[in-house]
Each structure stands twice: as C-alpha cells, then as structure tokens.
Picture 1 (cartoon, rainbow, N blue to C red):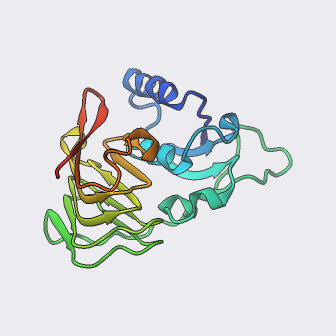
Picture 2 (picture 1 turned 90 degrees about the horizontal axis):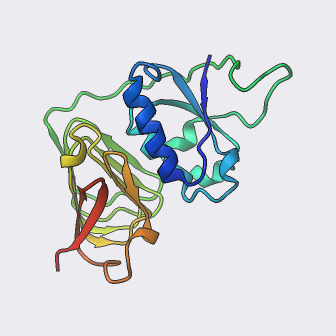
Length: 219
C-alpha cells in the first residue's frame, strides 16, 4: 500500500510541520512508498518540481504524483513518476495497491568527485550522490544536476541545481552566471522569485545560513 502526502498552503509551513512529524516519529515514513497529491495547492504552490526535490532530499520514497499536469514536471527526473490521476472503482485515498517501478541500477563511482567537461543540455539529468560535482560549461533550462556534496558550475546555470544530498547543509553551490530555475541545498530550495535582479546573471556562491539560502555575488 502507498502512503499519500497532500501538501497544503503555505508550502513552507507545511514542510516545517512535516519535518516536525518526521523528527517525532522517524520510522513512520521509513521505506514507505509515497504518492504526492497536489490537489490542495490548486496551482498556487509554485514550482511542483521544487516541492518534490524538497521531499526527495528528506529521504522519502516517491513513486507517483496526482492532481497535477504531467507537463509541469517535464525535463526533471520526476516526470518518470507514476501518473495516478486516473482512479479505478473501489479505490480510496489510503488503500490503493501500487506496482512499484523497477529500480534502475546505479553506477559505482570511482572517486568522491565527478567532473563533467561539457555543457549539460536541456532534458539531461546528472545525479552523483557520492560527492562533489564540477561542470565545465553551462546547465541549460530543463536540465538538472544533483550532487551529494557541493556543486561548481563554470558557466551559465538556467536549469536546476541540487546539492547536499549526502553532506547536508555544509554543501555549497558556485556558478559562473545565475539564471537558474531552481537551486537547493539539503532540502532548502529557492527559485528566481527568491533572489533579486541584482544577483540575476552574476557569478554567485550559494550556501545555507540559519535555515535559509544565502546567495552572495562573487564578482
């Protein structure tokens, strides 16, 4: 059986409440397949992929989504999640039998860092959970890079950057030109609406400070 999460507005407060619940009962969500139902957000929850990144970085086992148009997850790893908008007769909210997707094998890294010496094109997804990732080039809109540690991009970032999957809040993100769709460190995420025009298009460092992202210009 799958467990259904129903995020509510405001999303940040809902995530705080979820963190508190997970701290009180750490085993409650462990190894349970999760379906995220977006119906309560009614299109006002911002970027749905940003919320899914935040849940994923909390260690939740996401297998499907519902209450959302699939096109809103295009170009992210979450577009491969099961689409559960269609319910069969007799289903209820917490009693659906779900066939889990086949897990793809992951390559074993040779070291604790990964260097990509080419641009990351739209639709590409680079996931390296064992250490830092360095991109010698740009990250296009619709592309994503996920690192267990810190992220270094020597070019323009228009896609999504996620750092700290393993190292947590100590991770940092460096990029040559910030025009990203989303940046996240250890479950704390931000979008273009969260930084001002003064920082857009500039070389920056991004880190966590007091539970929020702090973005500092480097030029």
